[in-house]
Length: 491
Ligand SMILES: [Fe+2]
Ligand SMILES: [Fe+2]
Image 1 (cartoon, rainbow, N blue to C red):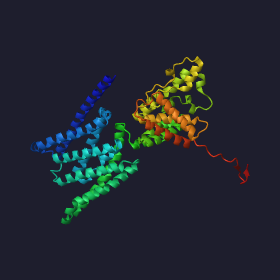
Image 2 (image 1 turned 30 degrees about the vertical axis):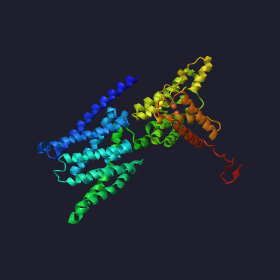
Image 3 (image 1 turned 45 degrees about the vertical axis):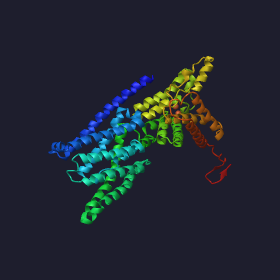
Image 4 (image 1 turned 180 degrees about the vertical axis):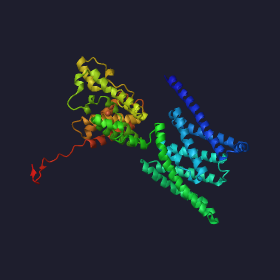
């Protein structure tokens, strides 16, 4: 089994290495195209005279790409072994390099969107990776500026160094500024904030030239710099959805869009299975609170919880929360009932994949009951058959949760359902129920495939008890008086 897994991994690694080389060749082609565009008539001569520089460029950009690959090789091997993600990384870099080249060559070097790669990667990846990408990008752009005939022809050699500094400073700063942003408007505000240091740096660089009447040129550069900061955030806004869709990746913006209750699947849930919809809303809140307490991605946990039961859309009336008086299961054998109930995990998975929803939503839908038995129908079968029923026929098919978020949704889901059926909801009774359902899942190895720790489980339990004792609090009984139109009061 292990050998098979390794074999599969080396196949993936080989495929991702091949895509890496192919993508690098595309980057190289883009760089050569720049040399050609810079001087269409004399580019061969440039190459001949500067062969060592061009070779240095080829080797150094390759090494920089390797740094990126090796970072993921040690940090997130699973990510980089997927050939698609290698293409994702390269398309991000190549696109931003081309954009910066076009701005530097045809507009003004200071109008370059210096913060673009940082802004895109802080949302598409995370802060740590955004800082690394920004550093690698700054060096790569500097090498391209140095060893192509990009600025040697225009004669703006000093600006190349300024461009490097601006890339480092503004990019890194925008990672810090944009890291906590959750709205598209906030991203534009980040552009305004990044414009301030850009302006300061350009003016400081230009200070020596101010006296010689060069102030006009310096002020123009500063204006370009401010514009470049805006261009960074506007382009980040425009390009983000393209990457989100192309590589089906999740940014905080996409997560928010998908959890708006007018998103199409949630709309269906609301109208066709209102009970499930309400249940999902509460589970989403609980999962979000637990994820926050664990330092996990709260937006992701919330979104996954919204969609965890969409499989119930196939037969909404078969689930208690959507039933009124009539219960279809009274007419079915327990075996058939259990089959209908357990299929909602797989149905949810299929529905989410068919709707091109993020893979992680589908995984959580599939895993949220793990391999737990469906107690009600197992007990019914035992009773009807006189104790001759196999618990496997009355259990969910799994798999068990593979991520912390899936484990959180699993526990929050069962806690919501269990506490709902409690007659007396005090912190003590809620604690007892939540504790027992977590212990039951531990006994049945439901967390064997995910890295949730004992401490995490304790935190989840405490968070759920606090939240559920609050959610289900009893209202103060209203006094039985009724006002009538005349203003008098009936008792
Ligand atoms: Fe479920
Ligand atoms: Fe559920």
